[in-house]
Length: 376
Image (cartoon, rainbow, N blue to C red; front, side, top):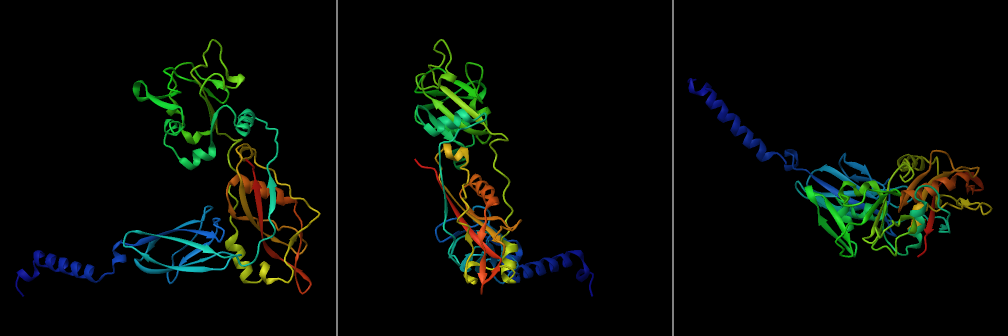
């Protein structure tokens, strides 16, 4: 064999040729070009379903939907794939989707209920006596007379980057550029700066850089375009309120949502599969709320003041004695975490007529709807 045949140059050429050949026969998804599936799982009525199991059939890829019914599965080989969705209390369904190379396929699946839910418990808004540092804000928000109100729900839905970006969407509000890049506002095309209050305390008169307050730090905003509509509590002497008033209310420990309820759907599904508990379509007599017990859930003050309606479908196991078993409470679907917390609190005192099979009381998985009606 010649020296040339053993030279480093020759072996480098052989290695490159083998590498090119291996890439030619290697499937695309093995070269880091896998795709993803992004989707949403809802009930037939359009309510998002949390805790639904999503699986790419024939693979190891699976996940659960979040509180908004959203799921995302990454690393899926490109090509045709079958997505199977299951959730206890609903009939499973599947859909075929084309996974693009290094792309995302979008999917929406609706699951039919396996059995009828119980009759919804209706919770109606009522006249509340608000307390705490936000009492005045909630009272004015409920009346909605004289001012422009921006609620936390609006802030969370719009997701503005800056406070000025949020405020300029309101009629009668214009922005002005201040020194050093700061941003100010003008109300009703006035040339003077409005007074700004934070949590009931006045900020120094003059220009206030509103963008120094991040929108996500605020629970609510009140805008009063002139002095005549400003609440007496926030009127200043010597016509200082003529340029308008901005009231900012910050978030704090008294405004934060409760911790999310741990989802128990996966454990409950195993119990149903092993017949340790039953669903409503598997029993002779389904569990029913005890008619002697009134489930009077408390309407969350922030949502009551803002006239927000809502729906919660709670999930839990009713024991043979008619009690809700500890550690089984979960939320199938909810329009707001504060509604979920109100339901969790009221169910602590609930009792049921237990489910029966051939006259014998048994454990049953229950889906109990709650409708919150805030009114106009």
